[in-house]
Image 1 (cartoon, one colour):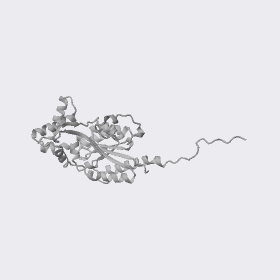
Image 2 (image 1 turned 90 degrees about the vertical axis):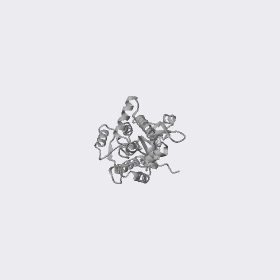
Image 3 (image 1 turned 135 degrees about the vertical axis):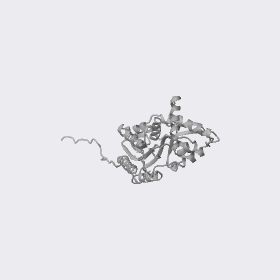
Image 4 (image 1 turned 180 degrees about the vertical axis):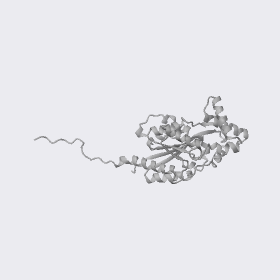
Length: 293
């Protein structure tokens, strides 16, 4: 029986990592809600503070409340249509197949995941959704008529780490907490942390990057080369020991992120396949000593 190829995971934040800025800023807030982007996020912050709540829950609540005020369509399909127009960094659309081919040449099984505080439904409608094993992101709850009626899942900066452990144990269903929390020896887990690379850009990625880095994996800080705030966030991730690798948001072949991905896959492949190359002598480790005459 042919042994399974070692499984490797590239996990990504979305906003600021695969796409510039917040996904809601691209069209939904300015065009459909008719609001100033900055004012919307200021209201989110004020609502979270007033309610002593979570900013992710606050932004999702305001998205729904303001969409209802405008009479916008709230079906699952309408959210996915909105996601189809999301702007991506250069090279993102052909990145996944390129890395998959490299991994296969190294006899590795590469899988891709999203771990994002953005909207799952928007990401599901994006041109790259088909490449992901799972999209872990904040999600709406829908009624039988498929209209968004509330919030089903909120992924914030601390809960992102949960999804790394789901990947590590390969317990992928969001609702399955019993299997996730079951004790499991590290060497029995499906994807060791040293075979996980996480690509992120800022504050909501801090605990995730720290976890991956401390467990021997790869944390890659992605920044927008045209935005000083984004560059400062990347430097902060380095200075605080959260990420040791970095590159501008350019996923084209030969760009920094592409070269880093190639190097990481080669290193993971060498480490994963080395044990199979070891051959010890097939003899008794404690041979009997000859008797004295």
